[in-house]
Picture 1 (cartoon, rainbow, N blue to C red):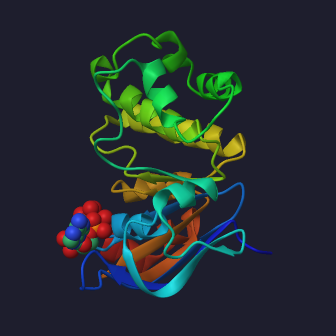
Picture 2: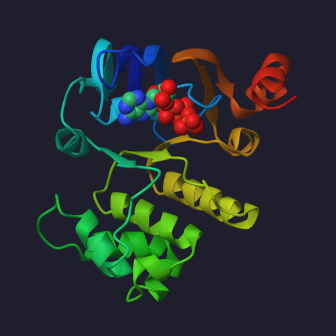
Length: 235
Ligand SMILES: Nc1ncnc2c1ncn2[C@@H]1O[C@H](COP(=O)(O)OP(=O)(O)OP(=O)(O)O)[C@@H](O)[C@H]1O
């Protein structure tokens, strides 16, 4: 079966230096896939490569078998992939509703069904639709960032450290929202610093180190792997 998203043997970086040496991963419809690994492993860079923000010098990236390697981010959005960066992912001076509206800037026509869909997934945001995004809690701001991306109705959502800086309670809430988003038909690929928690909740995971694949498997397989535990999960 053709995966929804596939990255095969990708090599590349920001300038001339290669940060990613050889990264391969795939995401199937209906999956939550986590990328974990030590600081500087290239996790965020792998995600940026998918979204057209990197100079790719080898390998390929496909969506439903269609080659998107080297396309620009707006073309990648049109192909069905949206990306939520770790920082600066909302407009703090705008209301929740305005943020969602801005998220849909690439769409034309009536947005009411897109708003309904997003507010259905995030009841907290519906309640706070007139609140300035900058006045929300960290967890709620992350919901706004995800909601903005979902306004474009992607097939795959890329999330860079969606739980960064959140308390355990909000982390659980964001993970639950990720499950709801998946159950609504959007596959997720996420980078996580909270590796143990992420592997416990994802369907499958990849461990990256030094810009290359090190381990892959279901979350449960990776959690049970002694080398993964010793080298990457703090024993
Ligand atoms: N914009 C950039 N320009 C040049 N080099 C960068 C840039 N962003 C990251 N790097 C470098 O790329 C390497 C991988 O960084 P990346 O952010 O992908 O790591 P990571 O696995 O996500 O780890 P972390 O959790 O620390 O963010 C690091 O050596 C980093 O210094």
